[in-house]
Length: 142
Ligand code: FES
Image (cartoon, helix red, strand yellow):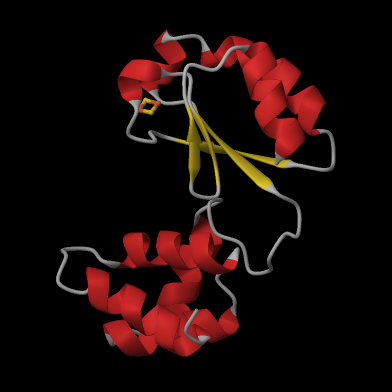
């Protein structure tokens, strides 16, 4: 993996031509480093020709972004409409119990597998058609 400034620069370059590149950049940085810390904010601000306060304001506003990395494994669970229609809400209580304090559950809104939900993701691995036992297994293995 390239160093942090280089990696963030590549993320910025990938999104810079988009309208409203800030959020996709922040999501990618959060995903890659587990946080958007002050160093990342400064690099993003310079890359988008904004003030660091502009970037910090966005990072602070959205719950998706954190300033410090959380060492726990993360299981992303899709709770968007298609996965809701396929029963994800009925799995959440057991998922929360299975996760305890060891695993961080993170709600996301669509993993791109809408017709085969409920879905979850751990790192680059996607898990589809989950029932309570399947999701508990995903959490246990995270
Ligand atoms: S709605 Fe869950 S993957 Fe799209």
